[in-house]
Image (cartoon, rainbow, N blue to C red; front, top):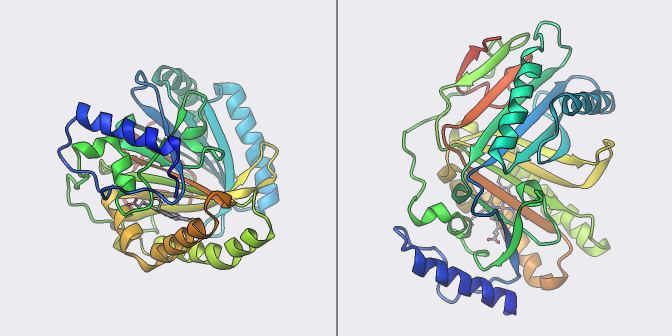
Amino acid sequence: MAGNLEWEIATMREQMTQIATPRKFPMRKPDNHQPVIQRYSSQVSEDVSSIRVATLGFQGKAGPRDNLTAFLDFIDNAFAKIGKPNHHDIANFVDTQGYSTAMAVCYWLDEDDYSAWLEKFDLWWGAHDPEALENGLWFESFSVPPPYRETNLFQEYLRGVSACPMTRIEPMSESGYWGAARDRFSASAHDDFSPEQNVELQYDPHRDTLRKHIKVSDIPSQLCVIRSGVTWANCGEEQLESYETNLKPKLDKGMTYLRENPVDTGCCSLRQVTCLEADGSAQEEAYSLGIFLTYRHLERWAHDHPTHLAIYTRALAERKKYQENLELLTYHEICVLNEDVRFEYINCHPDTGLLPYFTNNAADQ
Ligand code: HEM
């Protein structure tokens, strides 16, 4: 049991928070719950009003290596012209249509920094001629107020927003029971994440999107984005074999299910990527980046579907077995979005990102 000082401090902090702010919706955490192992969450300082995340994607049909070199040049040139975000990382994957794709996920904790970056970005982005591009490009950006994001991580494995220099890492006791993620959103005290509108996904992957610059509109508010990652870099032989034999196939099955069933699950996009070093070499880590219609859609899959239950059960068994000696490290961050979203695609195939679901408008150039 993680009955250590850190856990006790986390519990006291939570009790103090509850006294200070009465909840409309109760915590899901069972009384006297103690997690099997200590997990952490990342917090931002009080003066951060929103976290900005933007994904810059590069879609090409060439073999992974050729495409990667082109992507690295592209991203180097882009950041040289428009400046770097507060923090970013890069990854690649082959998408459902066989397009080898790479992307940079960029983070800002300072909206002024982002606005200054965006001004330069817009000039650079708007100058791309969709008719002349050999590859596809996308820009998917959103902001999220801190109460509408949560993280679950190990303190020695910080990725995504938790790797931003201005975040601090705190132990927490909200883990290891259904509803823990919900409890970790401070907004869950007054928001139960019920859908404001009854939206059902319509899937049309045959739209005319190549050689066009498209801005997706009519995107419902409350989209939910999850980045769920894992590293096997610290695994010895035994835990590596267990990951490859027992867990990875279950993860792949779950991700395939989500990709193949967007209408039933509300999962509009699911990219299963390998993390890259700055020079393009593969790291021993990966993550899934999923966009769901609402948090409730994500939660439904995680709680009820056999594919996530298989992953979850396996992961908890390993936690119990290895406890503090667990070598496979995981994290996730979840954001519940508002209307501040921007999804644009230049010369991308019609099954990219949100293109198959919502209204596609030619962007004003
Ligand atoms: C290696 C891959 C994965 C493992 C080992 C894993 C395992 C787990 C475990 C152990 C929990 C409980 C965490 C805790 O409370 O401490 C959990 C929760 C959750 N997982 Fe996964 N998972 C994986 C991948 C994913 C992916 C790819 C998604 C979504 C696309 C996902 C969605 C969720 C959600 C939403 C929860 C929160 C459930 C709740 O607290 O109510 N997981 N997962």
